[in-house]
Image (tube, rainbow, N blue to C red; front, side):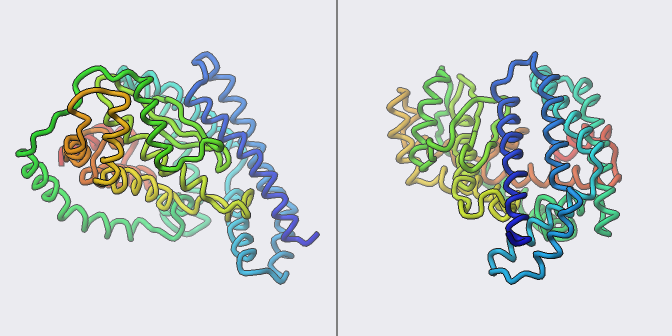
Length: 384
């Protein structure tokens, strides 16, 4: 067996454990009872440490050196490059930090589920402070190795090749024209006569409609499923994609568009090349590409006249009322309104939520601000 083939087999072993970690994470967020949090956190930390140990085994360095001397196809060269990149990134972190981050992240997220509904910033801040501290520690380690700023070193993990300097240029330009465009759209839409949802829309009926919409969007139900969680997300693995949404029985707009958004993520995962499964090259290329697919489904496909026509027909199978008329649904899903919640934002205001989070995250990782500064900064930027 060639060195390259040995690396591929090793990568598949790591991927199998990553599969378990992903499904366990979904279970924790969607169906795990609250009493299981501490034991689950410990189990996930143990699993993440094991994955890190596999990714950093000493003999891998020799295999990479040997594989680079082998005659490989263009595709295999790309697979080797991406596997080596993951190996190099993993070797930067000590096992103790990997374990601490897993434990702190699980504790913070689990507590957040109840703190969010109670508007308990003080309780959340105590757990989040540790998450931020450990993230800053990781960023500093990566920055020293890469010779970049801490934030750019972390950005490389999620959007390879992108820098904060390039994003600053892009977002600065957007900020010059987006606010006025939002205001103009809001003013123009004042003349629209929209019948907003205001009634009782049972969650089970919303889910039934959501499943029909997923089928329309060609979600593969033999390799995925829909569940409910506090915050919508897409998890799992390409052969077993788990998406979630949340339901508010006073309205149907957000849960349904959440399903469309997460289906976009899922379709990307389900469409990844099966021939490269188990290798880094068979995974999502970047968070930007991933989010582009979900937003394409939500903002372009999901708000198009052609889609709304189907949505009106499907909605009438589950609900009665003039709000499901095609023209009204079109007005609802193209309505522009300033709001506090990113996942509920419309096509125009959504970029503003992204820019706000980027600016705070960048300055937090680079040590320009402290985590205790975030609430005041958040409020200031929300008003800007």
